[in-house]
Amino acid sequence: MGTFIEGLKGLVMSSMLAFVVALVVTLVFGPVFIPWLRKLKFGQEIREEGPKWHQKKSGTPTMGGIMFIIGMAAAILVTTLIFSVNGHFDTKYAKCILLFVISLGFGIIGFVDDYIKVVKKRNLGLTAAQKFIMQVVLAAIYVVVLYAMNELDTHIKIPFTAFEWEMPLFLYIPFVMFVVVGVVNAVNLTDGLDGLASSITAVVGVFFALVSYIIFSEVGVTVFSMALIGALIGFLFYNKYPAKVFMGDTGSLFLGAAVALMAIDLKMPLYLVIAGFVYFMETLSVIMQTAYFKYTKKKYGEGRRIFKMSPLHHHFEMCGWNEKKIVFVFTLTTAVLCAVAALGI
Picture 1: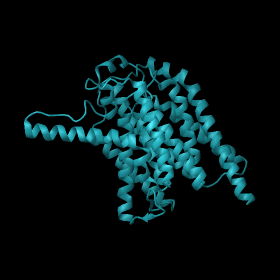
Picture 2: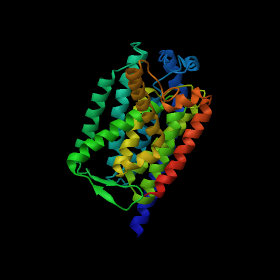
Picture 3: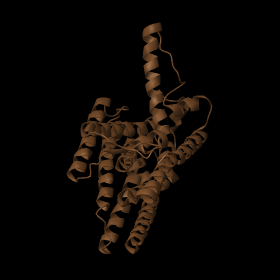
Picture 4: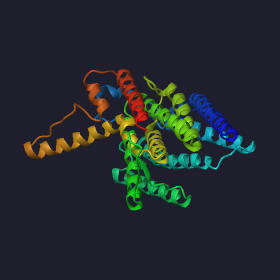
């Protein structure tokens, strides 16, 4: 019992340390990094297809995701070093490092995409095929590393049941890759309003932090999620409306991977349909809009739309909602659905 209690104390201390370091580093880094982005003229070009009033945001520094990535990196590094020096390093910290490294890989894909947009002046960045191939390869690398670490657990928790499905390996591998790539792109689509993706992901991070700590006592996921929450709260100080900086694909792809990997590690990818419902609906709205437009254009000679604009947050903008209201409602919805998902464990 004493060893168990000491383990919990260590987990609490390491988690809070990760949270504080990530928060402070991100906050302190902002006043240095944002002016530097302006100096380099790394400003976001606003696509003409979006709401017309978004054009006033043109030139706002992008690639701000680097801020919370550095905040998380510092938090994980400091936490690991301190607990290693004191002899409390758990091998499960290696899982935390793996989660960060793979997420960073997706962040690098986003960075390349952002770089092409802001430096090469190609507003669409990487092609869809290029991004997809790179993401699939990185998701495959994640699966291979898990296998090499003997951490490839094919069990999937079914919401609102005590049942865990042991998925056959030949199904599990493509399923994991699908979840990772799908969530990464869903979070990327959600990043369309000031503070939207960062607010929602912070709430999802709280969900996974509580689940990993209270139910599973998973050191790696708990520390990773607490670092994520701290970094995002720090970033929101600069990213809330009106945003001083955008996260760019650098940040949104990193966050998407972080969310997907936490869910997979806890054997809870199916819970993302509930806890990450906003991500799901943002993606579904684009799919529905595109499919319906193509269908009606072929059948009637002109394309018709289900939503006034997609992704979903733009539809609400076109309905007259301001950005702050959309972010509040979507974030509150996520918090409620995360509570519902928690009841289903």
